[in-house]
Length: 94
Image (cartoon, rainbow, N blue to C red; front, top):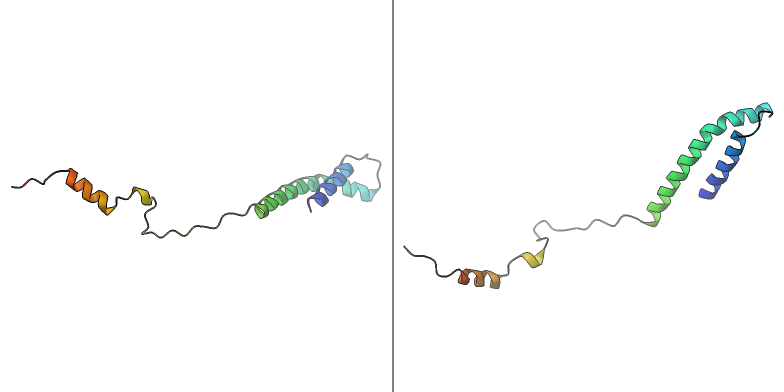
């Protein structure tokens, strides 16, 4: 597809820059060649984006439960809680 668009771009550019001594049908083609060049360039860019997206699809979204901690290593374990409460010392009594 991209080769076809590039070939058409070359043909249309040739007609756009051709001499003025052309039959009336080629004059019509020359007038249409300028917008066709822009259209073919835009088509080439769109095809490039489509090819890139097809070759490199977006990764599937990950399902993460809301109640799961994002960094499990950072949550204190029950043993750590026990050690930190005993390191604080006895609680003051009134």
